[in-house]
Image (cartoon, rainbow, N blue to C red; front, top):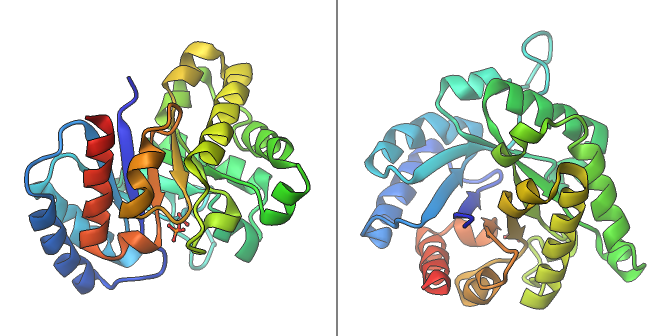
Amino acid sequence: MRKKIIAANWKMNLTHTEAESYFATFLSEIGQVVNDLEIVIIPAFTAIPALISASEKMPILRIGAQNMHWEKSGAFTGEVSAAMLRALYVKYVIVGHSERRTLFGETDEIVNRKVAAALEAGLRPIFCVGETLQERDGGQVEEVLRRQLSKGLAGVAQKDLLEIVVAYEPCWAIGTGRSATPAEAQQSHSFIRTVLSELFGSPAAERIRIQYGGSVKPENAEDLMRQKDIDGALVGGASLDPRSFAGIIWRTEAALA
Ligand code: PGA
């Protein structure tokens, strides 16, 4: 049984004070502790300390980071290392988000170095893959996913695989309001699991969690979360409002019922 993981990717939004008031509303919306889910909030670096202390009130909540550098330390102005995040008790880090790949030039090789550095430091990578609209229209979805998975996870030891969460985020669904249909998402998730099984063996592939991301909102969350190979969501826009993020969590609970 794979525990569902619902993560809020705030991107470059919310100051640390805004994060604190968000959290207070979120906590009252969520009410009872949700037992069968893992919830992760992934703010900008500056809001991490405030959220770490606030999240002590909610043990099933984890805090993540949106990025990190693969080197341990050194002359890399503007960068943050995995050890710096671990020192703040950060548990997860997003690696290979499509915005990092397209806007900041991150290649599969860079993503692979970050995955390795995160694992070495004891951080759990949320490793993102997904095709562009052009690639989808060109019938290249499987080829792109296979390449991103095999290059991004190259050298990962089998024992470390379950530290990783894969996030399938078709680029055309991110921030567009146009989510993949549950059937489209399920098809890609099942393909991702097949590739992971070729790379790491079927027992590990059956246990690894694969999140869907791309215009997830309370209205579509339940149908998506009912799909056999969808083990959670990585939510951007709809996670910026604590009520709508809480709504996605409740819809996920409903899908589990
Ligand atoms: P979205 O973003 O929910 O706004 O589409 C998802 C993501 O980029 O992780």
